[in-house]
Amino acid sequence: MRQIQRFACVAITALLVAGVSGAQQKAPAKAKAGGQDATKPKAAVAAPKIEVLPETKDAGIVAKGQVIETTFVVKNNGGSDLVISDARPGCGCTVASFDKVIKPGAEGKVVTSVDTKSFSGPISKSVLLVSNDPERGQINLFVKATVKPFVDILPQPYVRVAVVKGDSDTRDVILLSEEKTFKPTVAESAQPYVKAEIAPASEKDKVPGHPGEQYRVRITVTPDAPEGLLNAPVRIATGVPQQPTIEIPISGVVRARVSVTPVMVNFGNFQAGKEPITRNIIVTNNKPGTPVKVTRAEVSVAGFITDVVPTQEGISYTVVVKASDKVKKGALDGTVKVFTTDKEKPMIELPLRGEVL
Image (tube, rainbow, N blue to C red; front, side, top):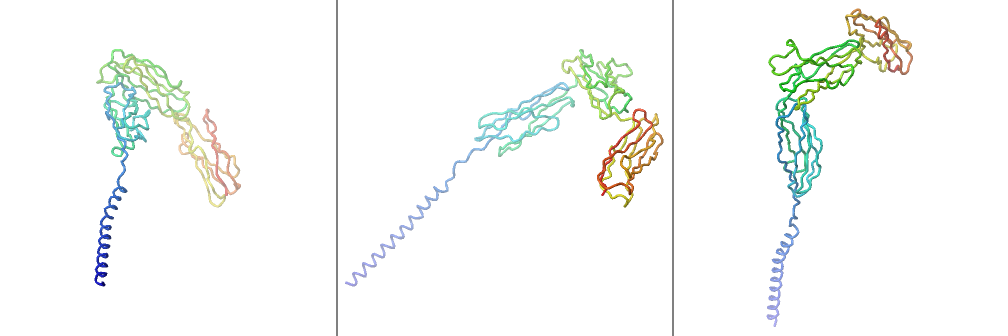
């Protein structure tokens, strides 16, 4: 009886061991299957894909002064929005407009312009397109052309002047063209004190080695031109259909008959009496043929001393302004007056600034 019971216990134990082993073998398979479901990758979102065809546009031969307008078509061949964050023009090119977001499968535009008035011969201008395309985040677009001056300006396409207030200055340039309809006339001058006269160029004035008709343009800055920088272009009608107008830039400076440097006397922060503090004013006669003298100078604030030192009599002077120990504490807000023998400007007044500690 005991043997039968012992045998039954052994059999039951064997069955239990087999069942556990089978469960352990099946569990990893289930876990493996479950693991595959958990780690299965989701479908990736398609990226935007930019395409510009063509990336270079050639305008061919254009007349000097013509504005080249160009439109580039941008296509999104990707699966999500194409975002154009920037369109950076290179030197001489301007981006008028561009579409910032282009839907998948859709098209957008980049519109550019190139003003050719400053160019001659073959040119190539670029625009850098920046987008969120992961493969082509930056694309250079190019506008090419050959700029032909149907009317040329020699010896240079501009006029520079330097004149003293009250004087006049005259400069000549030559217009030339091989076109049969070429007959230039002055269309307009930007300022009344800049005059332009056009006449056929004499044999003496003509530029050798250039075929075609030549005309002399005489530019005169009149005595009533105001002091300061000069910017007064002259526009000319040419009679040439390919280049109907041209512009001659007129620039330079009209200087004062008597000029001073600096234009303000600034002492900054200082303590009166501890050490000698001076400031110098340079007075220059810009028309040396007519002498102008500096006779004296005075300061509106008490405690300042002035001295006039001739550097070159009748032409250049140094006015020394010195702070004495009698200058009162506080902010300086006064003037320095310089007296001259110039009839038009007998007195020059400069602001005086600083802080006496």
